[in-house]
Length: 99
Image (cartoon, rainbow, N blue to C red; front, side):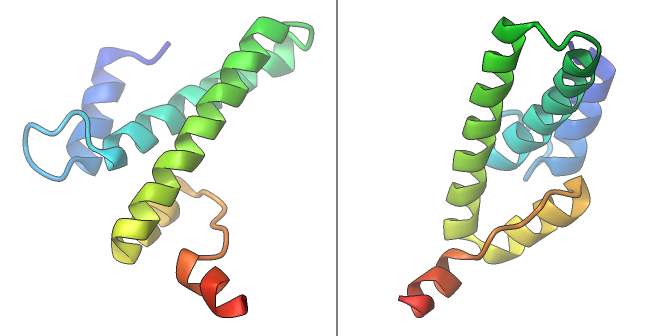
């Protein structure tokens, strides 16, 4: 569970404007933090399959949000990936060129 202070800090640093709480950028940052916490929980409790399922759902949601941001603005996508230390896949434009 993320503490309120940590969540507010993420909203402030990734928000597009002052009162931003729901943009894709903020959602990605919050999901990343939750994924980190849940990953450490699963290292201690490897048989907790219910939490593992939740983790996989969060990872899938974050992936969809990242793909959406990448399609809208490559610059924002690169900023998010770099600041959260995520692995970046090929960009949508690069995939189209390969085909």
